Amino acid sequence: MAAGSPSALPLTGERLERSQTLRRTEHYRRCYASGRRKGGSSLLLYSFPNDFGGPRLGLTASAKVGPSVVRHRLKRWAREIYRRHGDRARFPALDLVVHFKPQAARSTFADFRSELERLLGALVPRGSE
Image 1: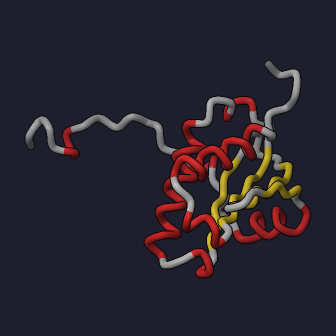
Image 2 (image 1 turned 180 degrees about the vertical axis):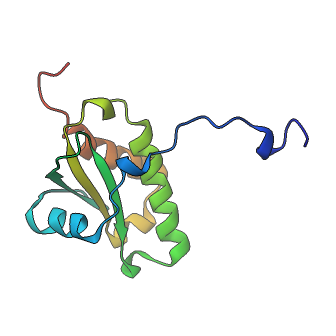
């Protein structure tokens, strides 16, 4: 195997663990039904306290957002922004669902990132500097 081939590269461990993502439909439904909602022009962020000791992320996009290529691109963007968010370690134990609006398909990455970072930044408790 060549030294520059992707298989030869070491794993960085930057991936979200399964315990850091929402997996069950009832957890998504609980966020939608009973969670707090914050919105922007291209996405909604739902949050609901959990008993798992840390934040867990879920992503949803209906077919109204666009074809699967667009929906999957937005999900990759959101995972990357969340994963690299500087204050993520200070988030309370919440289930988070990011739901994309149809407008998200027309967003640039910079606009999308600033909106998601603004909504995520509101989750950090005040005075925990």
